[in-house]
Amino acid sequence: MLEKKFIDYNKSLLTYKEVKFQDIKNDEFVQDLLKKCLKNNILSKEEVDYINFGISKVLNKQLIYFTKNESTSTNIDIAQNLLMSVYFTISISLKRNENILEIITRIKEDSIESIFKDGQEIIKMKFFKCRLILESIYKNKININNYAYIDTIDYGLGTFFKKYDYFFKAHEVPITLDYPLSDNVFSYIGIERIERYLINLNFENKFCNLFNENEIKKLLYSYSDNSEEILLNIFNIVLVNSFGSFVIGKDFKNLNIKEYEKEIILNNIGNHELLYKYLNDYMGVIKNNLNVNDKEFFQYIKKALEKLFVLLKISYKNKTFKEQFVTFKNEKQEILQYKSYKKLSNDEFRSIYEEIIILENVNDKISLLKEKIKNIDDIVDILSSECFMDNEYIILFSSLDYFEIALIIAYIPDIFSYVMYEEKWQIKFNEYFLNLKPEIQNKIKEVSRKISF
Amino acid sequence: MKENITNLQQILYAMDNNTVLIDEVYKVNKFICKYGLRITKEDAKKIVTVRNKSLKDNGRIEFNKSIISEIIEKFASSPYIMPSNATETFCELLEIFYEYKNETFEVLSDEELIRAMVKYFNGYCKGSLELLEGKALYKLAENVRRGLKNPFDISCENNK
Image (tube, rainbow over all chains, first blue to last red; front, top):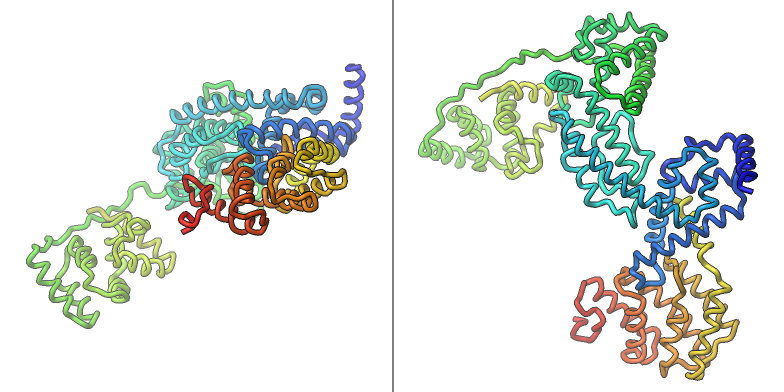
């Protein structure tokens, strides 16, 4: 009898090839599986109803647990959420079998409850496995300053293990994964999303660990002035430049692509066939340099290279090919040493303060301030002492040259952060600064970074 | 989301069985006959219909077993329920019950809510369903939301 069923299923599978494991939605696996099987006559309506009945029995039990058997009814949103959790848990168990035939056999012949329990056990194992991967990530993380990267690894991921509820909310991911990966994991839910995220992040870290940390830092700084704050994927940026170096015969660990080298890369791989060959050769070099024999890891690198292949092809057409590679910014950064005038004594400061505060005309106040106060500490003290009123601050800041503005920013590096908005002059300073043209803002910030006290 | 709701409805359809429910309600006659009350098959059907509509209106689902028999049994001894108005009253009590399961944010168990309903109905409300719904249970829900230690105390002092 069983044999006959297998033959029937095979026949159905051959006839309705479109139902493939890979085609079933990850985040709605059971629902999509039943829908597709029903559509392709792999399962009959009665069989789907019977499976739904099995699911309803499991849902019923979960609802009883959830309400501690003190309630016979519940809000539909709660039931909906519990059902999603049940579906997810069942799908985790079914996904152990990688072809539709095996999955259908199980869902028809095993009780839904036993599949659900099996799913719960797998989730527990995955939870444990994820903890181990996170430990490995803590060890392998790159020492760079990108807030999303640091926050996600140091704070976000650990929180998952405190908040995840495999029993009632197995499908949920109770944290946000801010740091974007090369291969995103949005099609997964629950523990699967975290598992996938951790595995991928671990791969990316392993790859980046092949490179010198300072080189990566220079690369990121050259990629964007705001590389600390923006959402970027370190692995992808490293991969592109590393591949570029490889193409022009440099060590693949050299992450600096000089301007003239971009032209050589373009000449070398403008031809798509050659590009593909280079990507394969590059893969070989990476394999030789990494002391790991993890197929999945190399699959991940390969997938990223395939994406890179598409990106370079498109950029070639759009004539933005060279822009894909990053040239390091001038390493010898100009330093502007600030030589301060002597700080005023308390008596001197008080006397000037009293002179300024009695003046009614803002221009007179500004002239006096510029004439008598030369030290940055004193300037900030005067600003804090509220000698100026509301818009007088704006007039004052407008009268300063851009170097003086840069000096204030360099003196108070956190001036643009909200927690620093304690004093009126800082609020006005932000108002003034944000009204400047973006290119001027960037220039001032650049100068402020060079100032040393 | 729409698809998820459809899935839930399919699952709920598998869980719910009106015929079994009607029989269950009908069987409660064994218990309530001593109070001179009786529910016909037609009454039972009507109660189940009201239950289904009320669950839908209040965005709730029932699982495990139905609360109908429990409510009928607990209210059957009330001096304010007459054979002439029994079915109507049970229907309204059922609607009020589901409404206040929502209003009390699932904090109260079924048993606690029914006990409170019986107490207010027979006492403070003197059989008035309007008072029960609009005043007593409204106050109870407010007390629950305020996190009072004893939310069931709906006396005037507590009202302030």
